[in-house]
Length: 193
Image (tube, rainbow, N blue to C red; front, side, top):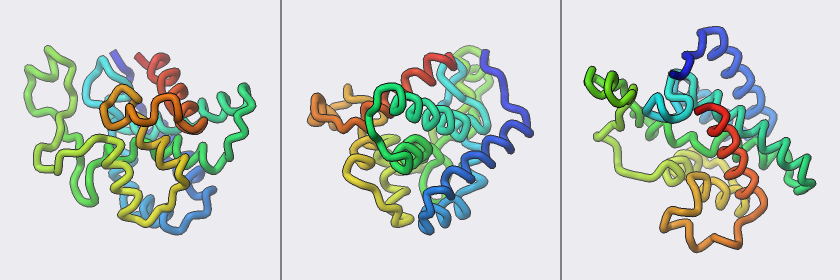
């Protein structure tokens, strides 16, 4: 069973996430962080206990770990990736999991059976427009006019994996940033479950 983050850990993770985002010196990103901050802070990274970071603060914790692992991959394999791209993609690749501009994607599971039998702590908000996590992330970023390079856009698009039909086009032609993100996510998730 996953361990819940303490209030202090959620607070220190948010402080680190916020500090790293502000290092990117992007006024539009700062506006998004200020506007959606409380929702980002408390967002889980997944819905079920057998998945990763399915607790309040899970998204921020997961994103920090992914960005840090991307930096290690970049350094150990001499990929030559820009730190700003690593931070932007690593920290924001799953930001769509918060939902849309006003409503949360993950809401507390109200079924005791689903919580007890399936470990499903959250459920999807059925009132939101159906959209993949990558597409929702790209939608939120464009809603705040946060610019992405083509490699950053492709990395976020491929963040959920090349096995999805819409991502097969890129197989064998992924930029190094996308490969670093996918491998970092796999390593972080493997450590957490």
